[in-house]
Length: 482
Length: 108
Image (tube, rainbow over all chains, first blue to last red; front, side, top):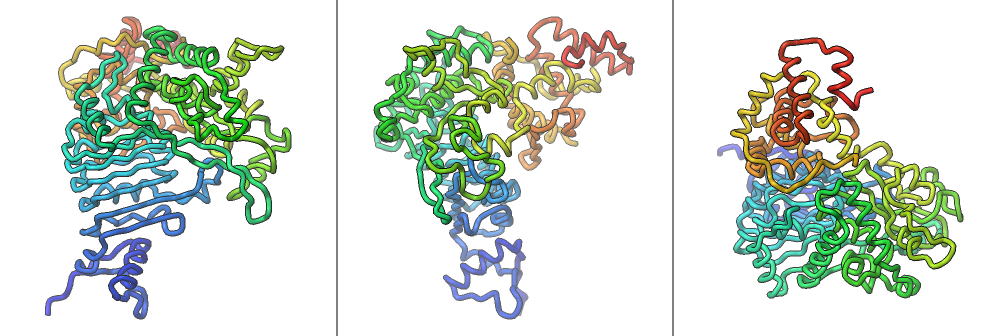
């Protein structure tokens, strides 16, 4: 009798597979010592895998490509990681992603709230029908969507670092089976092929409208609001809870058109990054008012006050709405930024504890400290921080506190920290990290990168790039120092 | 280092730069870099340390120099400065401190 070929799985995955085989198929791998080798037939029985806060983490998906019949994979974490120590964060890592990308049988893939996910390339997942990528704060690249022929449903929002998706408009336009779209508001420009010259992809817009007319399209912004609960030690804690602020397709188009008009009226063409940021924040300070009525009754979330739509269309919102609105306006100018959760007030003031010393799994602040606050960090501009909400408050104040100089615009981390307590992630763990993209660019701009490069090497690589093409005529200038 | 890996490294650097650089680069060139890169070779840019300390291959740096010369320079002077540097490196000429100051305005 021929010997059956067996495949050895990485231990973490082997344990998961063995449990499923035992529970669902009555196949025991724990007879005597644990057997981490499986026959092809056994591996074929695994069609679905799910990892969460208890079963997930780095390495949980390594080797997953060895499961030939895996159709559905779900990886989820439910913790708000803005206030959690990195050691306590459950998340898949780069090795897991490399395995997932090779899992060609997958039809449904869901990845939610994975702190260490920074890139995902789905180009080899040719059977993929449903993709859900939600709330992964450090995801910066999602590639290969255009190579997935059967894509039927795409959900992608709340990924703070995902500023755009390459060829998203072409993907939407060319996928005959695509019937469901739930995308981040910030991805709308990518979805319609928006270019900085103002051009758009009309075919993609038409396709989106057709999907929307069948009820299959919405645009989402994941917003965070304060929520008080009591932890296991009887302490009242304030933590961020994520809500989803949804827009219909007509609302999204309305908001986009408003944003374009605002930029047209308030930011000169070819302005530098700094001037664009100041122009946008100045507009918000003048024209958008704080929705005190709903904020007081804590109903702002229900009225969409935390989203960009209220800020740009209705012209009233709360702090996060200002930040989200500003983020969208900057995105249309190609400027990356992200919202930062914080608390209005200095550490050790009004009872706000020093977060570095009280850090544990849950505790954020001591009791009765009021509301969470949101500001913006402009990643493309030396990582400066802006608080458009407080600037609007100062600008529109009718009393002695009136200040129209935008005192909270383009502040460094130490400057903003004098008046704001940044989230633990932003204040402690990101300290010194995330070099500004402008700084990276400066190494090229000032030739520091080319100290040892020879002309002959450059010429050889120039040939590899092919004949020189005319540069795009967009009248853009390099960002950075104005 | 094969050429596909060079494209991968350049792709990684482009992804880490702000969009102004992409806007200045013709779409055909960006598509070429994207299409030709080795998708199994993941070069990650660590945003904590300078680019020049990240073990980018000389070929990738040379391709970035070509991109800068052809598409990113803002002025004729900037282009001439880079050409001067590359030619000096070709001949192994030792740059005077004054010339260094001119070439590397950011270096104190």
